[in-house]
Length: 265
Image 1 (tube, one colour):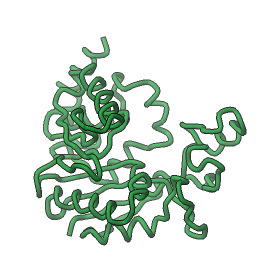
Image 2: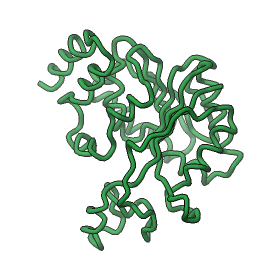
Image 3: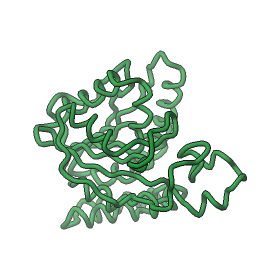
Image 4: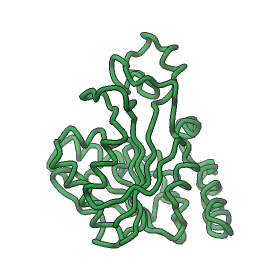
């Protein structure tokens, strides 16, 4: 039944929507999304975030490191008829066992919902081993959600290489949209906390040939002090401390996040 409803949505609601934001609302409201994912909409603000990045239905969009496919479930139907979605992550043929396992899990997710995901293209984004997700100057928008803090662990050279690969894939004037956990500017950086200083992220990305054009407080959470004993993973949805101080962390909610929009110069 859900598949039939989604097929009708793709054939009418999305393809025939007069305005891109109407189509985006329809994709977010799709009953075919995973219920557990829908419960996080209030913390992740998908409509406001993607609208801020300037997404349009006819764009070629790269989603870097889609993980479990939270945003893929929105982007795939939204771009289904007029645009292209490239999910760029680990390779099913990777020599790294963990990377291959993650890729296989994502492959299974896509295969289980051919109506929703049948037109999703795959690309390889496996730092530092391989960057093969799009032809140079071919992409309108690249988005990545809560991944930069993982990349920084590889050192400055690795991060610079990653941002250069994104810059190469984008068309001149293309957009790079970023969401990540934010460390308060007045607090020192804490290694492996999952939090980054917004100013440091901006500096890193601009050094790769981008220009910051806008930032938003869409995903801000002033309750998050960013000083938890297990870093950002103390907060939901991970709750790394399990039942210890669970009520406190649930009351805080998901992390305070920067939302940044860059353009390729």
